[in-house]
Length: 141
Image (cartoon, rainbow, N blue to C red):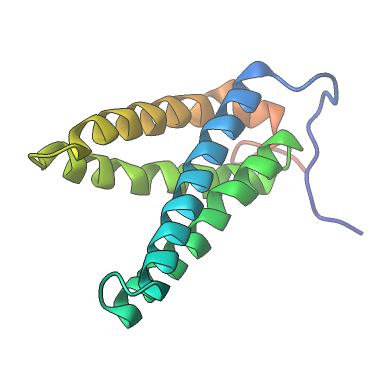
């Protein structure tokens, strides 16, 4: 028997869930792409092999989390909200660091902050909680 909670109304997926899933997927894909680029550059001899390869593979592994959360949000799985929220919270300090740089990272920081804040607003919306079938604390089972 599955302990997975299902939404009370299995009708069409709300737009806010679709948009939140798309934002999480974009972040996940960006992490995977940057990680693969770092790994390939390390293998081609650009930089120190061990640290660049480790960093690249770490980014690829971290990219799997928001991709899995995005898939779960699309399927309206209650577990997916937690990893999606954590991903957005972790993205905010990264965006802040990008904004502090005197380089081409500043526009990236603006975009990352906008994506993270937008996704957070969508994910903490009380209607999203209901759409994912998450019961409030103290509610009957």
